[in-house]
Structures are given as C-alpha cells and as structure tokens.
Amino acid sequence: MSQNEHEAMELMGKSTVEREGKYLTFTLHDEEYGIGILKVKEIIGMMPITTVPKTPEYVKGVINLRGKVIPVADLRLKFGMDPMDYTERTCIIVVEISGAGKKIHMGIVVDSVSEVLNIKAGDIEDTPNFGSRFDTDYILGMAKAGGGIKILLDIDEILNIDEIAVLERAA
Amino acid sequence: MNLRQSMLLNNLFSSALILGGGTIGYAGSANLLKNYLSPGAQAALLIGGTLAGVMLCLLGGWFTIRSVSNRFSGILAGLYESTHQISSASVQVAASSQALAEGTSTAASAIEETSASLEELSSMTHKTSDHSTSMTRSGDVTFGLMKSCHKSLRETDSCMKRIGDAGDQAAKVIKTSDEIAFQINLLALNAAVEAARAGEAGAGFAVVAEEVRNLATRSAEAARDTERIIGAMSGHIQEGASLVSKTLEQFYSMGDEGKKTNALIKEINAASGEQAQGIVQINQAIAELDKVTQQAASGAEESASAAEELAAQAQQMSMHLGEVTSLFGTSLDTIDNRAGRPADQGERFPANAPEQLEHIQTANTLRR
Image (cartoon, rainbow over all chains, first blue to last red; front, side, top):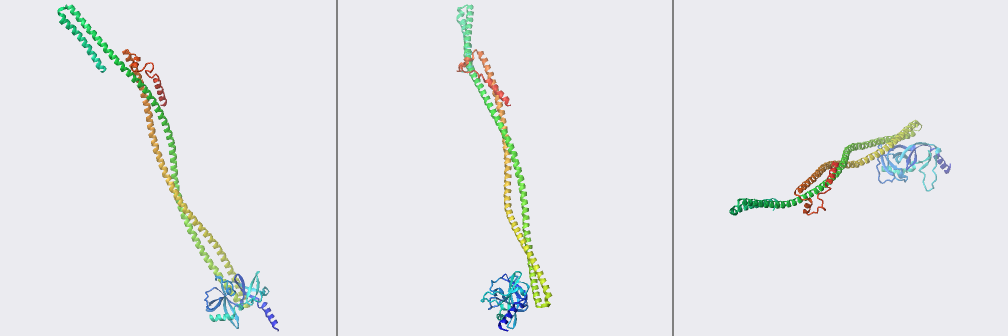
C-alpha cells in the first residue's frame, strides 16, 4: 500500500463512515455548527466563570462542574468573531478532547444549543477549497439539512491539546 | 287831600255859609234894622238872608259834588284799567295753564310708556336673573360631577397601574416558565447525548429524549407566545395609562376653566340681582314722577278754572263799573280819555276774552 493510497483510504474513511452519525448542533453568530455527539460530554447553562490570568484571549477561565475544574473557551473569540454578551440562551458544551494519548474535558461557550441531529453520509460534503493559504482542517465537512448548511467541526483540531495542557496546568 | 277830607271840607264850608248868612241876616235885622225897619221888613230881610244862605249852601254843595265826581271819574278809570289788566292776565294765565296741562299730559303719557318699557325690562331682568341663578345651580352640579369624574379617573389611573403591575408579574411568571423550558431542553439534549453514547441500547431512550425535547420546545413556544401577548397587553396598558394621565391633565385644566366659569356665572348672577334692584328703584322713581305729574296736571286744571273764574269776575266787575259810571253820568269814553287812552283805538275790554275762555274750558273738559 503506497503512501497515496493510504491517504486516499484515510480520506474516503473520513468522508463516508466516520462522518455519518449524530451531531449536536449549536449556533454561533447566526450560523449553525455541529459537533460529533460522542465528543460531547454534557451541555450546561451559563455559570460563573473564574478568569485565569496569562491565558489566551479566547480562554474565558475555568468553571467548577460538580467539583471538577474545567477550562472554558469562547468559540466566538477562537474563531475571531465579534464577542457577544452572554444571555440566558448562552450555553457551555463540555467536550472531550483527545490527542497525544490523553483525553481532557473542556467547555466551549456557544450562543445557543439547538438539537441532536442524525446526519446521513449522503448529506455531508467535503469542505470546499478556499485556497491553500487557509487552514480548513478543523472542518469535518458541510452538512446539508433543511435547505441550510451546518458546518461540522473537528473539535480536536480546534482546541490544540498542547494549548489545553498548558491550561490544565494553569487550572 | 283825599276824597273824604274834601267832602268834609265842602260840607263845613257850606254849613258855615248857611250859618253865616242866617246869622248875618238875623244880626242885621236884630241890631241894625230893629230900630229902622218895620217888623215886616225885618221878616222879609230874615227870609231873604236865609234864602241867600241856602243859595250859598247849594252853590257850595254843587262845587263839592263836582269835585267829588271828578275824583270818582279818575278812580273809576283806574278801576277800569285794572279790570282790563286782570281780564287779559286771566286769559294769559288760562292759556299757560292749558299749555301746562298739555305738557303734563304729554309727560304723563311718556311716563306711562317709560313705565311699560320698564315693566318689560324688569320682567326680562327677572328672567335673566332666574336663568343666571339656575345656571349657577347647574354650574355647581357640573362642578360636583366633574369632581366625581375626576375621582373616577384617578381610580382608573391607579387601576391601570395595578393592571400594569399584574402584567409585569405575569411576564415574570412566563419568563420563569421559559427558563424551565430551556432547562428541560438542555436536559433532553443531555439525555440524547447519553443515549447516543449508549449506542444501540440507548436508541429507545433517545426517542424519549427527543419527545421530551419536543415538549420543551413547545412549552418554550407557548411561553414565547404568552410573553408576546403579555408584552402587547403591557403596551396597551401603558398606552391606556398615558391616555388616562393625559385625560387627567386635561381634566385639571377643564376644572380650572370650570371654576372660572362658575365664578363668572356667580358674578353675572349678582350683577343681574343688582340690576333688578336698580330697576325696582327706577320704578319707584317713575311712580313718584307719575304722581307729581298727576298733581301738576290737576294743579294746571285748577289754575285754569281759577283763571276762568277770575275772567268772569273781571267781566262782572267791569259791568258794575259801567253801572257806577252811568250813575255819575260820565261815559266810559271820557273815562278812557281820562285814563289816557283813546276810546276808539284801545279795546275797553278784550272782546275775544270770553271766547278764549270758552275754548280753554272745552279743551280742559276734553282732556279730562
């Protein structure tokens, strides 16, 4: 099996079998996004966040979730969007990030949580090429649902585990 | 020397003459002729002397009568002149009395007209006064109504506020139910996540979670609808409250205006009362004036009749004078002459005086 074939197989696997399944959808800046449901640990309403100094701007701080300290990142800030005041619809999705042989929990702040959607493989399209300069690795694909498009995110890519490790230490 | 003295003097003079003649005759016959004359001659001389005395006496009487007659002529002329003056004056008095009577009758009719007008004015003033009184009463009633209306408005205002508060509370309740729906939604999502993690075993649970989520969504929708309705209601309530406030404000200004109007009406009422009183006084004065005019009219009538009487008396007097004149044998012409007035030029007595009097009398009778 050559290198190319392996890459092709990997791509195929990613596009068909792996991407099909249930996604938790949420909104961010009036756009719908989806995260694979197995990545989601829990959904909680907004709760007091303790800010941590000397952290990146997108890291809002840490929360105390039933005795467990979990770092929280604002996805708007991470994506370079305008910040928004938190409302009663604002939620924290606790996700499980895996990488480098370990799994950590992390909260991400989203505008609101929508629903759990079962997305078929046929409804998922590959990310269009915006040019080589733009990194689209964090996007799993584009899901067509109800006339609109939901961007499926690869949360492991978004939140670099090394950065999280630093945060973990800070926490 | 007056007439009485002159007559006395004349009598004395003639008596002296008679006595003198007699005495002289007697003395002559007694002393001088006693010795020289026979008793027959003495008697003749005595008779002659006496006759001479009587003659002298008669002569004196004639002179006396003549002088008295002359004086009487003068007096009669004066009397006649006075009678003439009185007669013409009485005509004048009668004429002016008539004029006065006419004037007073005109005044009386004018007063009557004025009195009638005043009566009308008085009744109108009374009516105005009545109207203004009832206006005052209805103004008071209106004022009372406005007060109670104001109270009701204030109650409405506070009621609107209470409704607004109730709406706010309902909104809070709805918010709570919306939050609960949100929490249920989160729970359902978490349940769905757990079901997915459970794989095939969690499939049934996933369906339940989905249903719960649907319910939560419906509940949230219902809450949102209710919230919208309550919001609209709240808006309407606020609108109503502001309208009530505005009405209250306008009502306040209306109340002020009403107070002013009421005061003005009261002033009008007082003024019309005073007016009525004034008219009553004017009425009294007019009645007094009427009385005085009546008195003046009756006085004028009396003076006219007195003038008539005076004229009649003057005529009578003139007649008597004529008789006296004829007694003395002096004609009225000579009297006129003596009075310094030619008989053919001046009228002895105003020839038309009786006619004038007649005319005045008729006029008076007619007026009565």
